[in-house]
Length: 72
Image (cartoon, rainbow, N blue to C red; front, side, top):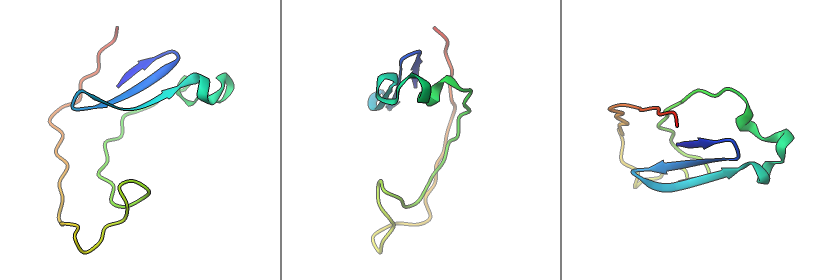
């Protein structure tokens, strides 16, 4: 995650995955002006990637070796 005053960028394996720009929210509604905490989650179902079906393999695992936080 690159967290700057006007934009947040999410990366997965070094590839840009998503971006949230302050201009898209308006300054008053920009959610990233507040304190946040990391939540690492293996969710099943939802809008992306969709609900599990007969081809979904269970059980699944999410193994996180480490999380690094750097400050510029």
